[in-house]
Length: 204
Figure 1 (tube, one colour):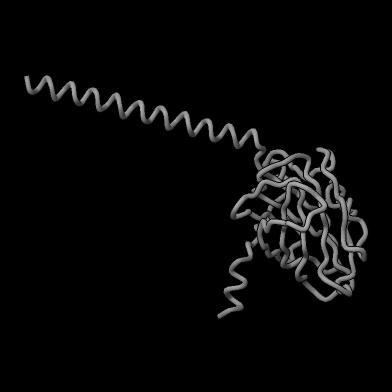
Figure 2: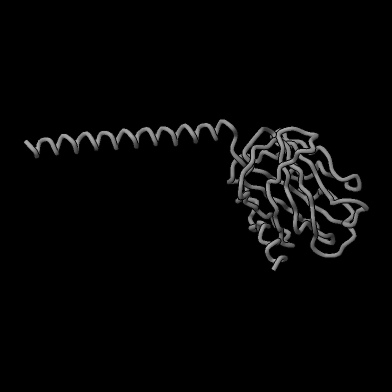
């Protein structure tokens, strides 16, 4: 039915260790890398905690707000193709994000956000890793929390991490692929020339 179809679009997270996250390379949402948390819904506090590695500090908002949804905007340290996002909620005795939408853009403020994806987290107190189905170039991300686990008064989120490829890495990949293609065509042409020479020899 319609409800199941609607849930299909949510990408489910995979529980991972902090050690695994450290092996993924540069976290482009790291405060120590120059990323910034810029804004949040007016009822919330502590959004700067989301980009730091201090697990005792967190973003907090009343779960029920008067208008709209709870949200946070972050600025990545550089423009990247966003490929993977990790979210951690470590606080007990609070509600945690369940379904959330991530929007992306190259500039901020903007009314022209692009949808990066819809994601569904479990109620786990571990980091959860989400793979973006269709990576988008972005410098700014807006995380919109659509629903939450449990019925506590406060909703909390402790950490957001983001991985992807820079424009230079993308260009490098394209050049490598192009080089392989050129080599492939060369091989085919060489093969065709050899085959033609063999055929000529056989005919003579």
